[in-house]
Image (cartoon, rainbow, N blue to C red):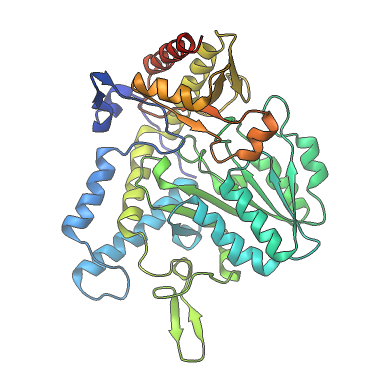
Amino acid sequence: METTESAPLSVEDIRSDFPILEREFDGTPLVYLDNAATSQTPEPVVDAIVEYYHTYNSNVHRGLHQLSQEASIAYEDAHDRVAEFIGASGEREEIVFTKNATESMNTVAYAWGLEELGPGDEIVLTEMEHHAALVTWQQIAKKTGATVRFIEVDDEGYLDMDHARELIGPDTAMVSVVHVSNTLGTVNPVSELTDLAHEQDALIFVDGAQSVPHMPVDVEAIDADFFAFSGHKMCGPTGVGVLYGKKHLLEEMQPYLYGGMMIEKVTFEDSTWHELPWKFEAGTPVIAQGIALAEACDYLDEIGMDNVKRHGEALAEYAHERLSEFDDIEILGPPADDRGALVSFNLDTVHAHDVSEILNAHGVAVRAGDHCTQPLHDKLGVPASARASFYIYNTREEVDKLVEGLEDARELFA
């Protein structure tokens, strides 16, 4: 993947691109720390959406008029831009636009899994998987007779790689693993897992929803067979996700959504499919969203993904250190200096939902609940957790505001 030199990250300049960060609630400034759920959207990305609707709004492909031609070119080029962003040399043929990462996973599960899996086959997941992966493969296994097995998570929040080597064997057909845990912040060794899968002639699907927004990602260096992520977590709009797949695999797979745009020839007796990636994009696709996602890639590349990574990890480390000052706060996951850009925690005797409500009164937006990882929370023995997650526009001062709010929560529930 091509990389470019970037100037150091300027949080003040970046924040000026996000008007929502200027909001106040009863005079209390907003501190937005819910970026693992959805990042905010900068002006250049919003402008790209407005430009589409104001100047060349039209359906893509097959239209011969000027607006359709312009929209088609922009939409197709957006696939190429996203491919470049994640290091996919196959360009648009390896990039399918979906509505989110969940749909990307379901596309492979249904288009590949239902055809290829059967009794005796094993799907290997991890105990830290998001429901988008866990539930999807669980249900596909029920339909096909395959078995789902889980790589264990150790007490520090890391994958037990010895257990992974035991589980991934001759019967493994698919390994599906989250790149960065949205609950623990663990950055998993996906390249090593890829090697283990390929040694057994298994495929690997990497959930990059929490990695692509926060660090340089090269899908070919990882050697992932499939890779998924969402636009709304990386400064893009809601309603667009990405499925990367190796070209030869996508060519072999049959679509599972049918209709207009994805066909080549239709008769009363049968149909044939369009070329990649369009055979997986049935109906009117996510045109404005895809074009805006390409703009988000440009925006992040201008900042520099190495800078994005350093900034997020530094804030997470600082938050970990501040929260560690208190004996009654339990932090989930790896040490401060070895995690992605988030920290999940619990304040003793105070439910995470109550913590979130009190923080909200301080203008601090965090996520509370099981973060779509119920089995992981069950394993950890906690019903829920509060999660602060950071991005390019957050500051150390905002982490301090988080801590101030937690001190208030402690006093209220003392």
